[in-house]
Image 1 (cartoon, rainbow, N blue to C red):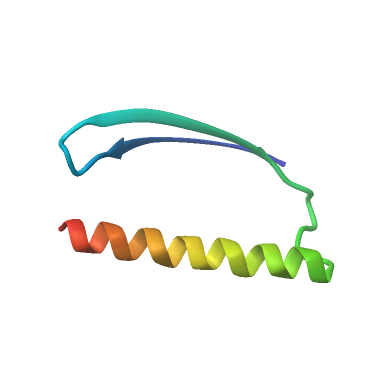
Image 2: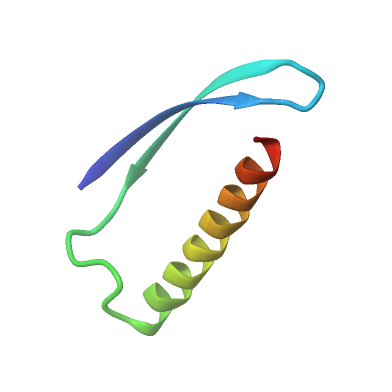
Length: 57
């Protein structure tokens, strides 16, 4: 499964930068302990980004 994420980064100094991320994953991800570690890391990044966005509002 392939995923394309398009987003715009807004900097505290007022600048903005469009970005794109291309990601390919296995269909049945998170089937091993290595995948579980990756899932925890992704969840922590999601929480950190959500917290930063909440602080900006």
